[in-house]
Image 1 (cartoon, rainbow, N blue to C red):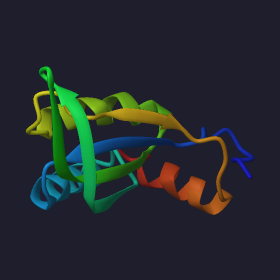
Image 2: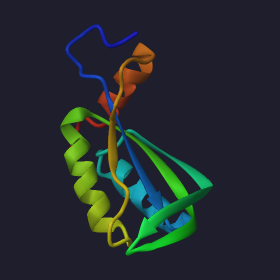
Image 3: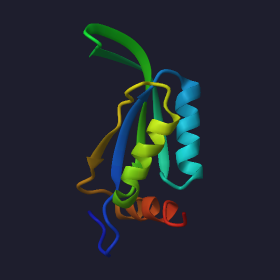
Image 4: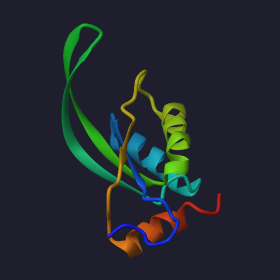
Length: 113
């Protein structure tokens, strides 16, 4: 269930990267800077999208970034700074519930900035 104390539920930030090297660099920066507790990477994601009037297809790496509500805006800003895309995907998803020990761990890993 959700946290029983005053710690807010985490946020998930989704972003795609063009390759493993970019995904690794963004993931490392976010965790090292304590903007994220964890970043999971899913390689081989196939994206189809419209860009500048054309339908595009790309193989990308999906990032699933675990952070706090207070840091979500900073994560978005850092993605823009580190990302090679002109317009990177950067979506914040509100978490509704989760395993209490994991939720506390996310909060703890991002606490000492």
